[in-house]
Length: 132
Image (cartoon, rainbow, N blue to C red; front, side, top):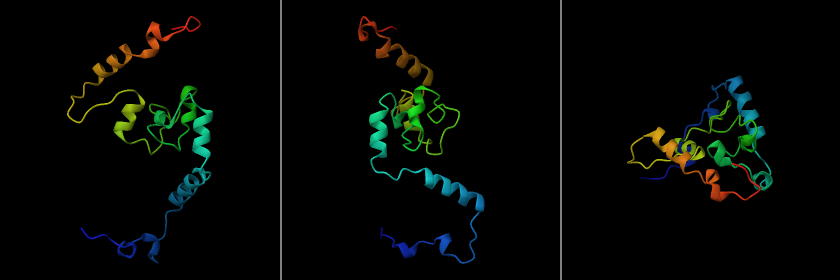
């Protein structure tokens, strides 16, 4: 299959008759403004917040995954999921449930098994100062 060149694509912004929707344009500008500009920002966020990770937000590094242990608004199952949280495999991984392609979708059994086998609930995982 031959590779396309940039000039082979049709871009709406190159069309002189195209008028962008102001609401969409405003939304896009807000999203761009929120995007991290500092290449060290994600590394710093990961170092400072070891209690959570982007995996809690289904891999969405722009979400407020740091709040997973507090409010969890933008994490999987939160009140305010972000548009990037739409990959089923990453959502399942975030809640500790994953499936193989040829596996039956017995979600309840998978969740019950996950909860039965949680290392944190195993008394051997605790020290004398910890509580279950």
